[in-house]
Length: 266
Length: 135
Image (cartoon, rainbow over all chains, first blue to last red; front, side, top):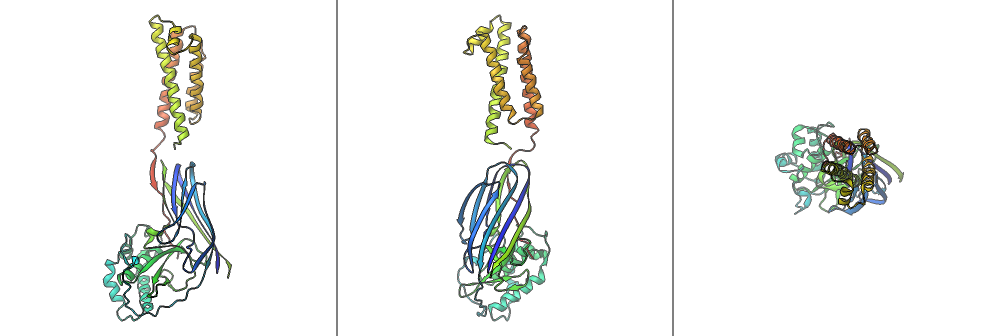
């Protein structure tokens, strides 16, 4: 299925900004079940641009604007093909994956405090599919969707204690429990394929055959979600859509984010 | 906000202002000491008194062009005041140079408060991040 995907974020500043430098991950991922057919990344005002792929193979653009401005718009316009995956989750649990980078603790996702919960939750579970479903059910029961309750620096455990959060927190807590069970799982940032209002976050769980299955704990959806993923990483810090700094005497704020996903072909 | 080109203009505006003030003060000392303005001009590498006045005039024109690139109305009023002094009668040379010095001091003070009123200094700040919050 082919999608036209547009991402646009607008920043406004109290005073003139003389340098604005940003690292962006706003282009659909080119790999796994996605193929990036075309893309364009730019900013208003325009700046110097450079491009690279990071350690997770995400497409990263760095944009440095040196023209004096009080408003900055960063946007991407892409065409991406999303294919369905062959999903299999009836693998035996537990399974020894050995070392994997998606098992390690990170600043935002530390599996340690979730050890007991994880073991308790998966008592009697025989397959990975059952484990995933019981974790998602548990997370959804513990966290109430509440925008503004958390921010980009809220850790999985803080969100869990708070009992409130957005898709990012559902994802972090799910990742922490999966990693506590030694199941490699990664954070995915992207957009949903049905009238998205903002960027979304969900989880990809590694199967013993090395493939990843997608799970959306926020919307309680499992496998072959059909969403358009932008970037993958260990936690949000690896995939932040736009991260950067600017030089100014005044403060700045993210005024709005616009995300558009339009199906252009089956 | 301070771009490189503006910083350059501020630097040169400062230099021209100092130059005019300096000529004014040296000339007053010379007049009070009975030294002719032709001798003062020679000290500056100029031919004579007329060139000294032309030099002040040219320095002022460069000063005005530099200040015009960044300054507001208040500073331009001070600049115009200085122009009046520079173009005023030179019959009373002591009064003439005193007038020039007074206008350079006044323009200097106006520049000082112009920069002091610029608000908080430039700082490197973090861009606000976009937290995924789709539902």
